[in-house]
Amino acid sequence: MTATNRLRILRPEEIDAVQKERVIIYGRAGIGKTRLALSYPESWGKAAYYAADKNSEFLQSISRSKRGRVVVATQDGPDPTACFMQFAMTDWKEIDEEIGVIIVDTYTKVAQDAIRYSAMSGAMSNEAHFIIGIPGQGGQAIPNRGDYLAIESLSRGFLDMLFDRQREMHIILLCHEDVKIVEDVAAVGGPAHPGRAMTEYLPAQFSTVIRLIREEELIPGDDAATSVVIAITENDGKFIAKMRVEDESAPNPMARVVLDRDPSSYWVKYLGDPDAPSDGIKQGKKKKKKTTTNEEE
Image (tube, rainbow, N blue to C red):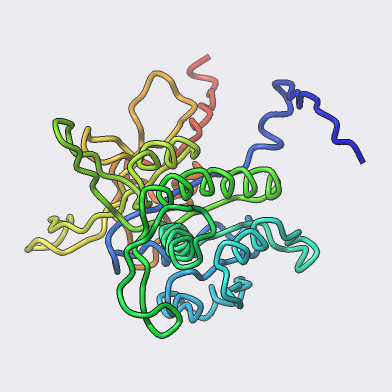
């Protein structure tokens, strides 16, 4: 069977109908990435959740009510690359027609497992590896230059698979945080991934990149500063973060948002729900339509 190459054309009235969210959430370990991701809007349906990090399949950081809408997939085999490809290519509607979200926790671990497997198996590089101990008996092969170049290409392929095969799904990737330091170049922080090139490439493929940080902040009504988690979607020149919004005249309304212990309200604001709490950022991504009264007319 010969593949047919053709253009996919979307008319203006069709864009909103096919648009799905593409989100990266990154931050340090224990900051609340999983909790924020799995607090996604109920209207999105159930989630197919790839548990790459150790013990992430137990979903211990979310309530039982949220666990009830998560279908967990884990690696069951020696080749992490083949397992993730299978996850990316699965027709999740056949597994459960209510699934509308793909979540990977974490994509950093997916990439790290792939480069480690490459070094141990020699599958991606013919260059010699420095080996500590005896492979197969606890020994480790250290990834070389060929492995790092290969994982960058492989990771791009993973993303293409996800975006093409899961076109009708919302996609959320979770990543750890990393800072790349290159000689004579300013340090850049972003989602952790093996290899320097992916620091910029990976977030560039997503419309929203949320960085989670923890700071001491004085909450209105409190007498002392409280440790809170803050969701950042504005690039500060050092760490990558962004959110594409429709309003071209106003600043990003969700550049800095303090998260509740249950961060479900964040997604309400993100989607621009007019019933969200009035805190100055409720318009979210979409500009709220102005209603006209008789007096204004």
